[in-house]
Length: 212
Ligand code: B16
Ligand code: MG
Image (cartoon, rainbow, N blue to C red; front, side, top):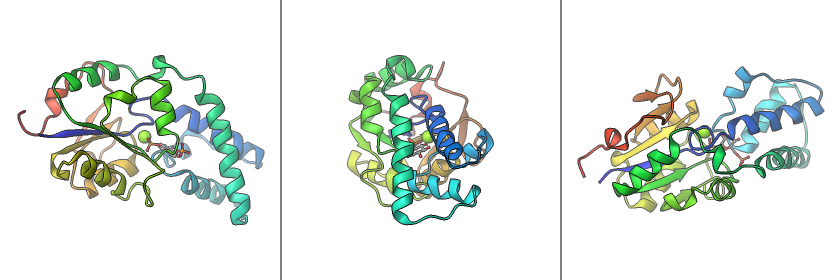
Protein backbone atom coordinates (compact mmCIF):
# COMPACT_ATOMS: atom_id res chain seq x y z
CA UNK A 1 0.00 0.00 0.00
CA UNK A 2 1.45 3.38 -0.90
CA UNK A 3 0.77 6.58 1.01
CA UNK A 4 0.75 10.30 0.35
CA UNK A 5 2.65 12.93 2.36
CA UNK A 6 1.66 16.53 1.72
CA UNK A 7 3.63 19.65 2.47
CA UNK A 8 1.27 22.30 3.87
CA UNK A 9 2.21 25.86 2.90
CA UNK A 10 1.95 26.32 -0.86
CA UNK A 11 0.67 22.78 -1.51
CA UNK A 12 -2.60 22.38 0.43
CA UNK A 13 -3.22 25.99 1.39
CA UNK A 14 -2.23 29.39 0.09
CA UNK A 15 -0.22 30.54 3.10
CA UNK A 16 3.03 31.15 1.19
CA UNK A 17 1.86 34.70 0.42
CA UNK A 18 1.22 35.39 4.13
CA UNK A 19 4.72 34.18 5.08
CA UNK A 20 6.12 36.53 2.41
CA UNK A 21 4.09 39.53 3.58
CA UNK A 22 4.98 38.91 7.23
CA UNK A 23 8.72 38.56 6.57
CA UNK A 24 8.64 41.62 4.33
CA UNK A 25 6.97 43.65 7.08
CA UNK A 26 9.78 42.67 9.46
CA UNK A 27 12.49 43.40 6.87
CA UNK A 28 11.03 46.84 6.25
CA UNK A 29 10.95 47.52 10.00
CA UNK A 30 14.65 46.63 9.99
CA UNK A 31 15.30 49.11 7.17
CA UNK A 32 15.53 47.04 3.99
CA UNK A 33 13.25 45.29 1.50
CA UNK A 34 12.96 41.76 0.08
CA UNK A 35 11.39 40.66 -3.20
CA UNK A 36 9.59 37.49 -4.34
CA UNK A 37 12.73 36.01 -5.86
CA UNK A 38 14.49 36.16 -2.50
CA UNK A 39 11.33 34.81 -0.85
CA UNK A 40 11.63 31.61 -2.93
CA UNK A 41 14.75 30.74 -0.91
CA UNK A 42 12.69 30.83 2.31
CA UNK A 43 9.99 28.39 1.22
CA UNK A 44 9.95 25.19 3.27
CA UNK A 45 12.73 26.56 5.50
CA UNK A 46 12.14 26.81 9.27
CA UNK A 47 11.32 30.11 10.96
CA UNK A 48 14.74 30.62 12.58
CA UNK A 49 16.66 29.59 9.45
CA UNK A 50 14.52 31.98 7.39
CA UNK A 51 15.34 34.78 9.83
CA UNK A 52 19.07 34.02 9.54
CA UNK A 53 18.85 34.31 5.74
CA UNK A 54 16.97 37.61 6.00
CA UNK A 55 19.42 39.11 8.50
CA UNK A 56 22.29 38.05 6.25
CA UNK A 57 20.60 39.79 3.33
CA UNK A 58 20.19 42.99 5.41
CA UNK A 59 23.74 42.70 6.80
CA UNK A 60 22.37 42.68 10.32
CA UNK A 61 24.05 41.05 13.27
CA UNK A 62 22.15 40.51 16.52
CA UNK A 63 22.09 38.59 19.80
CA UNK A 64 20.17 35.32 20.15
CA UNK A 65 17.54 37.04 22.30
CA UNK A 66 17.03 39.76 19.69
CA UNK A 67 16.67 37.12 16.97
CA UNK A 68 14.06 35.24 18.99
CA UNK A 69 12.16 38.47 19.47
CA UNK A 70 12.21 39.26 15.71
CA UNK A 71 11.07 35.69 14.91
CA UNK A 72 8.19 36.15 17.35
CA UNK A 73 7.35 39.52 15.76
CA UNK A 74 7.22 37.87 12.31
CA UNK A 75 5.04 35.07 13.69
CA UNK A 76 2.60 37.61 15.12
CA UNK A 77 2.54 39.40 11.72
CA UNK A 78 1.85 36.02 10.11
CA UNK A 79 -0.83 34.87 12.58
CA UNK A 80 -2.74 38.14 12.20
CA UNK A 81 -3.14 37.27 8.50
CA UNK A 82 -3.77 33.55 9.02
CA UNK A 83 -6.59 34.04 11.56
CA UNK A 84 -8.88 35.07 8.71
CA UNK A 85 -8.35 31.85 6.75
CA UNK A 86 -11.28 29.59 5.91
CA UNK A 87 -12.00 26.57 3.72
CA UNK A 88 -11.92 29.00 0.78
CA UNK A 89 -8.13 29.29 1.19
CA UNK A 90 -7.58 25.63 0.35
CA UNK A 91 -5.83 25.62 -3.02
CA UNK A 92 -7.83 24.72 -6.18
CA UNK A 93 -8.48 21.01 -6.68
CA UNK A 94 -7.09 20.02 -3.26
CA UNK A 95 -10.43 19.18 -1.60
CA UNK A 96 -11.51 16.88 -4.45
CA UNK A 97 -8.06 15.23 -4.47
CA UNK A 98 -8.16 14.60 -0.71
CA UNK A 99 -11.73 13.31 -0.87
CA UNK A 100 -10.98 10.83 -3.67
CA UNK A 101 -7.78 9.71 -1.89
CA UNK A 102 -9.84 9.07 1.24
CA UNK A 103 -12.34 7.00 -0.75
CA UNK A 104 -9.41 4.99 -2.15
CA UNK A 105 -8.23 4.45 1.47
CA UNK A 106 -4.81 5.90 0.73
CA UNK A 107 -2.99 6.65 4.02
CA UNK A 108 -2.30 10.41 4.20
CA UNK A 109 0.03 12.59 6.27
CA UNK A 110 1.12 16.20 6.43
CA UNK A 111 4.86 16.88 6.60
CA UNK A 112 5.41 20.57 7.25
CA UNK A 113 8.17 22.76 8.64
CA UNK A 114 5.54 25.07 10.11
CA UNK A 115 4.86 25.26 13.85
CA UNK A 116 1.42 26.62 12.95
CA UNK A 117 0.35 23.61 10.86
CA UNK A 118 -2.39 22.22 13.13
CA UNK A 119 -4.02 25.66 13.55
CA UNK A 120 -4.08 26.19 9.77
CA UNK A 121 -5.42 22.69 9.03
CA UNK A 122 -8.17 23.31 11.60
CA UNK A 123 -9.12 26.76 10.29
CA UNK A 124 -9.34 25.46 6.72
CA UNK A 125 -11.30 22.35 7.85
CA UNK A 126 -9.05 19.73 6.23
CA UNK A 127 -7.32 18.35 9.35
CA UNK A 128 -9.43 15.18 9.52
CA UNK A 129 -8.22 13.90 6.15
CA UNK A 130 -4.81 13.11 7.69
CA UNK A 131 -4.00 10.15 9.92
CA UNK A 132 -0.65 11.75 10.78
CA UNK A 133 0.51 15.37 11.10
CA UNK A 134 4.24 15.98 11.52
CA UNK A 135 5.20 19.63 11.83
CA UNK A 136 7.91 21.97 13.03
CA UNK A 137 7.13 21.15 16.66
CA UNK A 138 8.17 17.49 16.31
CA UNK A 139 11.39 17.74 14.34
CA UNK A 140 14.86 19.02 15.13
CA UNK A 141 16.22 19.28 11.59
CA UNK A 142 14.38 21.27 8.93
CA UNK A 143 14.08 20.55 5.21
CA UNK A 144 16.24 19.70 3.19
CA UNK A 145 16.91 17.19 5.96
CA UNK A 146 14.53 14.23 5.44
CA UNK A 147 13.55 14.00 9.14
CA UNK A 148 10.00 15.36 8.73
CA UNK A 149 9.09 12.94 5.93
CA UNK A 150 10.82 9.92 7.51
CA UNK A 151 8.91 10.51 10.75
CA UNK A 152 5.64 10.85 8.79
CA UNK A 153 6.29 7.52 7.00
CA UNK A 154 7.26 5.79 10.24
CA UNK A 155 4.12 7.03 11.98
CA UNK A 156 1.98 5.92 9.03
CA UNK A 157 3.82 2.57 9.30
CA UNK A 158 4.89 2.76 5.67
CA UNK A 159 8.27 2.15 4.10
CA UNK A 160 9.74 5.38 2.62
CA UNK A 161 9.91 3.75 -0.82
CA UNK A 162 6.11 3.53 -0.80
CA UNK A 163 5.57 7.23 0.01
CA UNK A 164 4.73 9.96 -2.49
CA UNK A 165 5.58 13.49 -1.33
CA UNK A 166 3.85 16.59 -2.73
CA UNK A 167 6.07 19.67 -2.28
CA UNK A 168 6.28 23.26 -3.54
CA UNK A 169 9.79 24.11 -2.27
CA UNK A 170 13.20 23.10 -3.49
CA UNK A 171 14.29 22.31 0.08
CA UNK A 172 11.26 20.02 0.40
CA UNK A 173 11.97 18.15 -2.84
CA UNK A 174 15.54 17.59 -1.66
CA UNK A 175 14.19 16.30 1.67
CA UNK A 176 11.79 13.88 -0.05
CA UNK A 177 14.50 12.51 -2.34
CA UNK A 178 16.93 12.16 0.58
CA UNK A 179 14.21 10.16 2.36
CA UNK A 180 14.07 7.75 -0.60
CA UNK A 181 10.53 8.82 -1.50
CA UNK A 182 8.87 9.69 -4.82
CA UNK A 183 8.83 13.50 -5.10
CA UNK A 184 6.04 15.33 -6.90
CA UNK A 185 6.86 19.01 -7.38
CA UNK A 186 3.91 21.39 -7.22
CA UNK A 187 5.26 24.12 -9.48
CA UNK A 188 8.46 24.44 -11.43
CA UNK A 189 10.79 22.16 -9.47
CA UNK A 190 13.32 20.53 -11.75
CA UNK A 191 14.77 18.13 -9.19
CA UNK A 192 11.37 16.47 -8.62
CA UNK A 193 10.56 13.03 -10.07
CA UNK A 194 7.46 14.60 -11.60
CA UNK A 195 5.95 18.10 -11.74
CA UNK A 196 2.34 19.25 -11.59
CA UNK A 197 1.06 22.82 -11.70
CA UNK A 198 -1.57 22.14 -9.02
CA UNK A 199 -4.22 19.60 -8.03
CA UNK A 200 -7.00 20.72 -10.37
CA UNK A 201 -7.92 17.82 -12.64
CA UNK A 202 -5.43 15.45 -10.94
CA UNK A 203 -6.53 11.91 -10.11
CA UNK A 204 -4.91 10.36 -6.99
CA UNK A 205 -4.88 6.96 -8.71
CA UNK A 206 -2.19 8.27 -11.07
CA UNK A 207 0.20 8.68 -8.13
CA UNK A 208 -0.28 5.33 -6.44
CA UNK A 209 3.06 3.52 -6.51
CA UNK A 210 1.58 0.03 -6.26
CA UNK A 211 -1.90 -1.18 -7.17
CA UNK A 212 -4.27 -1.17 -4.20
P1 B16 B 1 6.23 28.73 10.86
P2 B16 B 1 5.84 24.07 4.78
C1 B16 B 1 7.05 26.17 5.92
O1 B16 B 1 5.94 25.36 5.77
C2 B16 B 1 6.97 27.41 5.04
O2 B16 B 1 7.07 27.05 3.68
C3 B16 B 1 8.10 28.34 5.37
O3 B16 B 1 8.00 29.51 4.59
C4 B16 B 1 8.02 28.69 6.87
O4 B16 B 1 9.09 29.53 7.25
C5 B16 B 1 8.07 27.40 7.69
O5 B16 B 1 7.01 26.56 7.29
C6 B16 B 1 7.96 27.65 9.17
O6 B16 B 1 6.69 28.16 9.44
O7 B16 B 1 6.89 30.04 11.06
O8 B16 B 1 4.74 28.79 10.73
O9 B16 B 1 6.67 27.72 11.91
O10 B16 B 1 5.97 24.62 3.39
O11 B16 B 1 6.96 23.13 5.19
O12 B16 B 1 4.47 23.53 5.09
MG1 MG C 1 5.65 24.52 1.20
